Image (tube, rainbow, N blue to C red; front, side, top):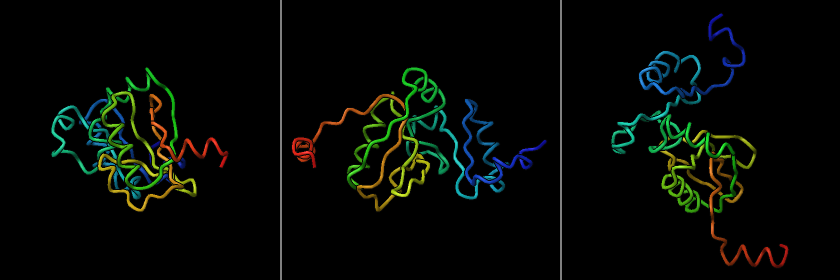
Length: 159
C-alpha cells in the first residue's frame, strides 16, 4: 500500500506534518504537497523558527509560538478542545494574541458560520471578514475572557 491508495487521505486536500523532527516535516511538505495539499500544506515550526518570528515558514501551522513540544505538553496537561464565539475581526486578533501569550493554549481552527473548519496557519491574521458567526477552535486551557458590560446585560435580560 502507498499513501495514494488510501482513499481517506486522498480526498482531504490538506497536508499537515506534525512530527517532532523538523527535517521529516520539511520532507513531507516537499514530497507530498502536490498530491495531498491542494487546499494547503502545513507543518509545525521548529525551535529555531520560534526564536525568530521574522524567519517563519509560510507553511507554519497554528502559530509562530507552537512547536511539537508545546503541542504535546499542552495536550498532556489540557486535553480539551474549546470553541469561543468571535465578535469581529478585532476580537479574533485579540484572541490570537492571548493564545500566543499562554503556553497552554493553541489555536487550531477558525470555524465559519456554515461549520467549515479552516486550519489556522502561523500567519493567523491573514483571515479577514470575520463576523459574529465565526468561532475560534483551540486546544488546551480554557480562555479566561472578562465579560463585557453588554454581555452581562444580555445574560441578565435573557436576550
